[in-house]
Image (cartoon, rainbow, N blue to C red; front, side, top):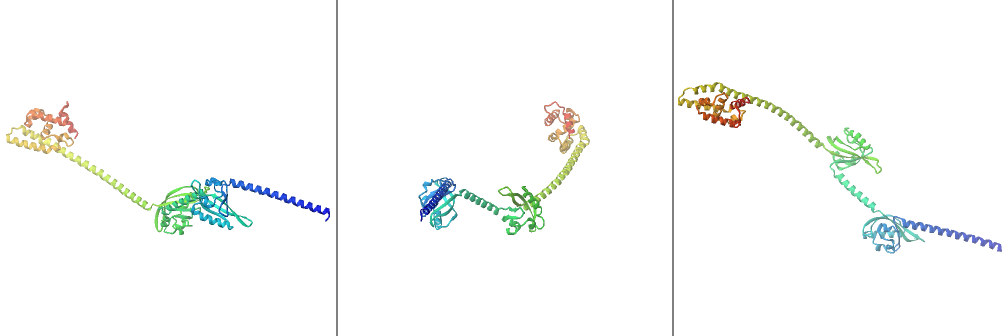
Length: 436
C-alpha cells in the first residue's frame, strides 16, 4: 500500500470517528433532554410515581407523595413495603403478590388499594405497575398511584343513595314508574306489579295502549307528551284494570340527563279509589242530611205557625172568658152584694165570689206577670179600680173596710212596680189590659 492510499484510509477513518463522536454527543444530549423531561414530569406529576427494586425496597418517589400521603420522599426511599406502613395489613399480601407478578414481567394495569396517610387518615389509590427491563432482566418496578379517594367516596355515596332509593322504591305503597321518550315503561316498582297483577317483565317495554286495551289509558298520552315538553303535571285519572275501575292521583315530572336534556319521565300514582268512594258516600249523606234539614226546617216553620195560631186561639178564649165574666157575672154579683142579705147568704156569696176569682185568676192577663202575682182579692179590687170605683165604693161593694182596700191598693202598686211613682193606678191598669 503506497503512502497516498494509506492517507486516504486514515482520512476515512477520521471522518467515521468524527461521525461516531457526533452521533454519541447527540445521543447524550437527547438522553439528557429526555432525563430532564422525565425529571420535570416526575416532579410536577399529580399522581405519585415511585420505583421499587427486586427486594421490594422503594428506590424513588415523586414529590407529589407529600400532597397525597403527607410523607416527604426521603421518608420513604430506602424502606421496604413492610416498613413504609402506608398500606393497611390486609392489603400487604396483595401488594407483595402483584409485585412478584410484575417482577416476572407482567403489567398491572389498575389495582385499588387503601392507604394510611401520615396523620392517620384513610385514602384510596389506584395503582398501575410495569417492569423496568435491562439486558433482558427486570431491574425495577415503575408504579403510578392515583388518588381516587374522592371518586370512591362519591361511588359510596351514590351506592347509599341508590340503596335508599331502591328501598323506598320497592317498599312504597304508591306506584312509581319511569318511561322513556317513546312512553314505554322502563322501570316499575312492586306496587305497580301488584296493581296491574302482572310481573314487571310483562309491563316493561310496553305503552299504556297495550296495558289498557279498553282505551282508558289513551288520555295519558297527551299528558305524558306535556311532561316530555318540560311540564310537571298533577291530576286524577280513572283506569280500568282487571275489570275494576280504579282512580289514581298522579304526579309526573320530566327526567333530564347531566346536560339538561329530557330523557323520559318519572311518575308517582296513588290509588285513591277507596277515598273517592268514601267521599262520594259522604257527599250522598250530606245531601240526604241537607234534604232532611230542609224538611225539618219546613216542618218547624209549620209547627211554629200552628203553635202561634193555637196560642192566639187560647188567648182569645181566655179573654172571652174574662170578658164574659166581667160583663155578665160580676155585675150581678155586685148587685146581689148590694142587697140586704143575712149572714149565711153573704157567706155563700163570698164563697161563690172567691171560687170565681180563683177560677178566673189564670185568665186575667196571662201576658202580664204582675197580674199572675195578684191575689184573688187584689184582682177584684184592680178590676173595680179600672171601672172607676172609689175606695169607699169598693169597700162598700166588697163589704170590707176602706183601710183594707187602701192596703190592697198599695200592694197592687208595689207588684206593678209603681209604688214610689206618681202614676194613676187606674190608667196604669188600663194600659196593662191594652198590652194583652
